[in-house]
Length: 382
Image (cartoon, rainbow, N blue to C red; front, side, top):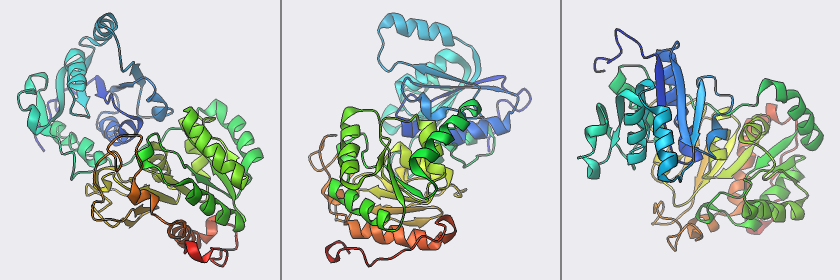
């Protein structure tokens, strides 16, 4: 490790910067934990885009969340800069963007972050930097590599959101009235269509789970399309549909007590992996080396997942679509967010049912003696 710039005088205030999507923010929490463990007396602020701050709810490592709108006019931008101006001893930018680096330069006297190959001339905003790898390094590990520039130890724990203590009893009362003790959580609708599995597959999986004596609970985001997709499934299988009705912290608490979670490449699947619930993750065009869910027990820098083939690691089972093009790293077969991905659509419900049964058999203690059988799987789905 290089000599820490704060070896003799620890930073008093730190600004951690991740103006990106919810999943990026969640996967930056191991870096927040590393900073807080190294300097427990420091005040740690986390700067994110407005709308993503919910994934940091209840995080014990963060003293303040700053949520700026993604789009602003110049007056608002000036106001943001005034708020940040040299308020921090250290700024840490977790993504290789001009915006993140500029926030860091405005906010702190000492700045570290990432530079891509195409940005070699943009190091003036940083005091120390690393090359950003967008393909062969997991997002958790990439963020934690910044600890090398500070001479501190990395901590590999993804920290999920948590409900405020004064709201827990009311939430649990509602949860018990809706789900009972034996339930599974399915998250059928990601934000983007190119990460979506087919509706009939979710229905067949839900029906099989119900035949095993389990309550099926659906989760999803607040967007109208996501709620409608979950509602269409719920009506076919009489599932409890909570899509759009829960905060991220409430979703995390719901998943903690589930017997099983199944979802696509989305932030809630990362949360399920982080809380330790047995998780099945569906992957198609996305790069699993970089974006595969980080299992709760994974505590080393290597990615849990290979480029192709999926597999099992800790509490997570990753199922990857088939095809020579997988993963293509594109936004669906038609290369736009509303496109579908054939590799995902062709995953059979039998594949997921077999994976669910394997997990449930291995976790019989979590299922209170639920009867498990493949006899109810239609031959065409096996």
